[in-house]
Length: 189
Length: 147
Image (cartoon, rainbow over all chains, first blue to last red; front, side):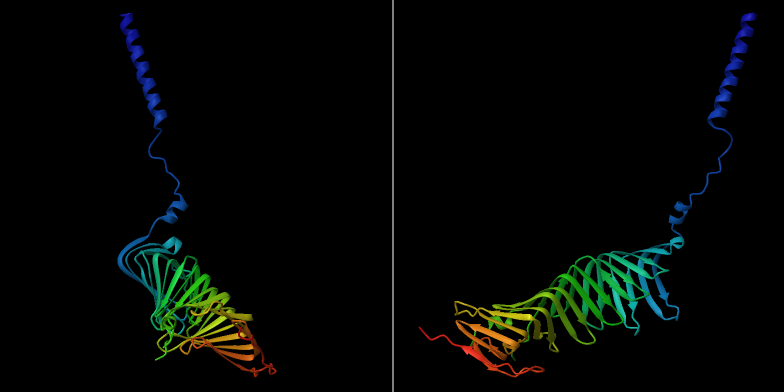
C-alpha cells in the first residue's frame, strides 16, 4: 500500500516538474517584437513592370523620364532601382539627351540618376555618344559626369579619357586625364 | 607626286584635358599637348583644333612658351625642328605657320623671324617679319655652305 502511494507521489512530482519546465521554456503567447525601423525603411514599397517614371521641375517643365522593364521603388528612401533603364534627359532648351545602362537608381527627391553597366549618354542634336561603366546625372543642375574611363565618339573623331563632365544646358563636354583623340584629317580635294 | 600616305594618316592627340564646346564649335586640348600625324609632331600647352563640315580636322593651333614642331622627312637624316609662341598647322595644305619668336632649323640652316612658313612636303621655308599685335621681328638666316 505504502509502496503504491510512494509511486503515485513520485509520478505527481514528475508531472509538476515537467510543467514547470515547459512554462519556463515557452513563457506565455507570442511576444510583441519591436519593429526595426531600419529594416522597415529598406522594404520596397512597389515593384512594377514595364513602367515609366517622369520627373518635373518646380516650374512644371519635364526634367527627366525613365522607362524600364522592371523597377523597385522604396518610398521611404525616395529610391527607385530600375533594370535596363532608358532615360530621356531634358536640358533648359527642352532638347532631349538619351541615357541607358544595364541598371540604374533614381532618387526622385534629388533627381540624381546613377546608371551602371555599359552606360551610354547620347546627344542626338550634337551627334555624339559617350560610353562608360558608371554615369551620374544631377537632374537639378543638368550635369552628367563619370569617374570611370570614357569613350566619346563624334564621327569621324573619337576621344577617350579617364573621366568626363557634361553640362547639358551649355552643350559643353570636358574630358580629363589621359586624354587621347583621333581625328581624321581634311585631305586636299 | 608626294607620297599620299602622310596626308591620310589620322591626327592623334594626347593631353591632360579636352574641352568641347558644341555651341562655339571649338575643341581645345590643354596640358602637355602632343599632336602627331605620321612623321609630323606638334607640342604645346594648348592646342585648339578646327574641323570642316565633314568633321575632319582642318587646322590645329598650338600655343606655348614656345610651342614646338618636329618633322622627320623620309629622305633626310635629321628632322626639321621649329619653335614659336604660336604654331598653326593647316592640315589639308600640309603647311605650318610659326608666328612670334619663330625659329626653324632645317639640316644645319637656321631661320629666325616674326613669321615663318614651312611647306612640309616640299620642305620650303618662307620668312616674313610682320607679327599681328607685336613689333616686327627681323629675319635672320644662317645658311651652312655645301661641303
